[in-house]
Length: 236
Image (cartoon, rainbow, N blue to C red):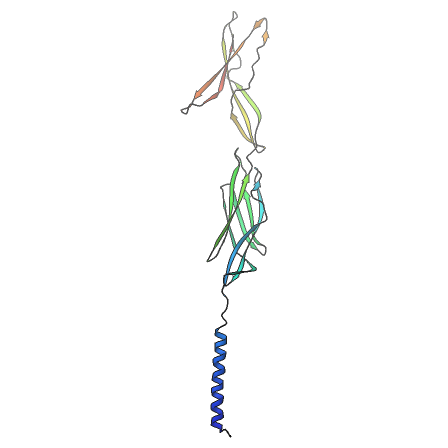
């Protein structure tokens, strides 16, 4: 049987249409997998708590973060870097941050602690995207200040006290101050308690003196007491 040119052309058109349909059907059935993330992880190169001296210092901390890739909701075992941010809490601490190839570089500085209490703070690290948030906290501790006392000053209100030849009584008033040292530096003199101060009677020209300490106390509204810095020595 001999085919005419028209019949051959019609067959080619029909066959081409079938192939196009098959090709379209094949491509439509192969959908791209849906990519998502899970298992967020934050890594810090310093153990918590991070310690600082009372004098103040700067510590460098490197932070990195990663997230696992999921295809159609299934973990693949592959990871990608994740962006992490940091905030510092605690009035004695401050930080500077910069992004590096290794992750987030933190420079945390503690100001000098001049109190007798340990200062505490923390770094809050956060990884956040559209579907999840992961946080980690690093504690910060700063030593209490070293409080010491240097020289003492005792000042008398009178240069001398005169007593009757036949015997009598007299008073000598004085004040006491001590030098306060914080972290090895002088903060000046402050009034101090007279506890621990010793008195010694002396003998001169057959006269014998005895000493009686008479400390004065002030009572506060709360009921507590403390000695004022003026004391009297009575001579008999």
